[in-house]
Image (spheres, one colour):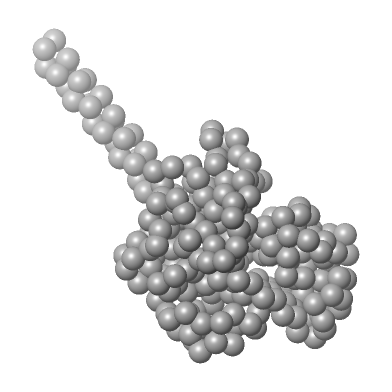
Length: 248
């Protein structure tokens, strides 16, 4: 009887260990599947909207993947660099029409053609920075507290001087005008660390890691296509699924 009890206990322990190992393996696998990319350091430079500064040569293009049933056969990609004073992001995508009519900052830009980036600089707090830019050069910079899935963006205060984002856009095959026919467009932005205060792990140092995601949405011909870097579900605000930026 004692042997049977000991044997049964041993089997149960082994099964529990196997289940635990399987659970951890699944968690590790999910975490390892999230994308990672390195961010090279650079000296500060002027943004032109074209990404023609020599510094961009040290940064590789990172592709965004279409989400769901893509309605448009366009490409989307980004590059990123960082300096002693801020981070640079270069967005690029092919396009046929600039479906953008809004001509003011802080509007609901995501309802028209747009590129977006989200920076979750510290996993200790569910707060991240969101930035959107339209083909016409209008922007939406907000800080987002995300508490148990409840989130709402807050606009920057004293948004000027060394706290203001520098941004430029350019189009190929056409002009940066509402509903213009084009073959593509780019957005180039410089986000100063002064604006990201008081987020933690800012400014980044060599070895610093930020969680992040990058998106594009296009609305040509009353059809919608979205792209993301790290795959999220229905909401772009699923920050636990963001990828990782590793600063060199």
